[in-house]
Length: 546
Ligand code: GLN
Image (cartoon, rainbow, N blue to C red; front, top):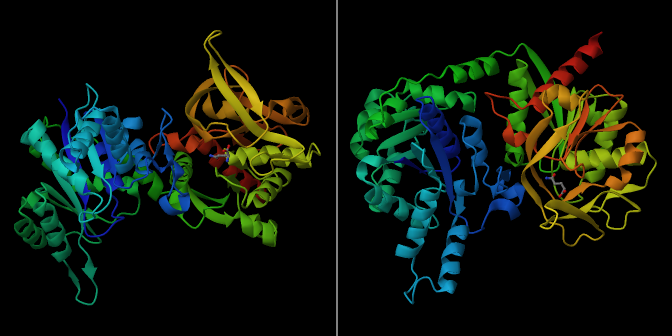
């Protein structure tokens, strides 16, 4: 039977509940436990798939093709968990399920209410993330205690302890202990108030994780413990650290693993965090440095590219290199020319995206990378733009993607309809000539890698699986022409229908992939393509000095 840890947040948002949940997951895994982590989001959208990255940050995609909150990316980067549709629920999804049941007549004429129907649905959602061998499920409740929206979730987790037994559940509250410069003091009042709010709705936190820019002295911990009715050893300093990957180590230095162990009656095991020590050592002691330009549209909100920037950092870890990011707004390239933005970088990356804004600037950046032989990495939309650039400037086609120009004479990126033919047992494809229709290709797909290519050199295997999130595809009608002119199709779907990776033959490192490799990169096992891209960028830098 699984144990449960519920994590709530107080005082202000953006304290890093996602990182806290992930780091606790890492600590418990280091004890040999099987951990799962779930996010309950109080917003009404059914999933974040339709939310603007400007507003909500990245949409993280799971293997099973679910569009989820970016915190699930942290969960996967810190633990061995492979998240699925069961690891993220929103208020919208919960209500949708309840309303569907109501329409079906499942409630047998009863009045459908927040308590018990919504709260029951939430409790069922929590249980859905538990597998038979799960030892601990960590549940992160989005939002801040005191928000109207999160109340049903808090009520559900309050009830949950009674359903599964006191000894199987703990509540951890993440709070802020600010340092007031003018007074020269740390202040506990916001924490006291936030815990008071929680206790008013019937939840007594077992552990307080206190975000602070300095270690809390013992007398401060005692004060918090007395006012908040917790054990003094359960008041933990969650210190600001240089890199998020240091958080598991910092928690251990505060004995958080032991406190959780005791409160949940887990078997006493000493945790071994040597993999995290190694990651942190590499991040803090780089021997080299490389500068990478990210040419994109959502550069104002860095969270829009969370997994991407993490994966680049992981590529740096693999090469003992500090990766410096230069954010370049592709619309600025359109206005001011490309040279001034890219002259000082060792590598150029064009990430995923939707819509036609800034596309021409991205294509200019890719042309620069191709002609000046600067290492280039194109991801999803970035690969599609690389195909357009090559078709226009090498193959002399008036090329575009149907997404940006529905009337283009050469739709090198187009819409493809796919369906499963039950009679033949195979997937079938048909091109679509309008922007209507065309379903999003979501989740994990198998890809075969051609030998003697940059992709094969990086992966070292002939068969991989990567996650997708796009509507448009490489148009096979142009495959022969493009390959004759020097483009290499180095990754392809097993049925040879979907182009998944492209490269250029006469270039040090020019690679585009239709999938999102950043979703599967971890600090403890950096993604092969990011490792290889950073390596190539270092080489390009050295070449400059010879
Ligand atoms: N807009 C492109 C498509 O839908 C690319 C999507 C992406 O980069 N994730 O195919």
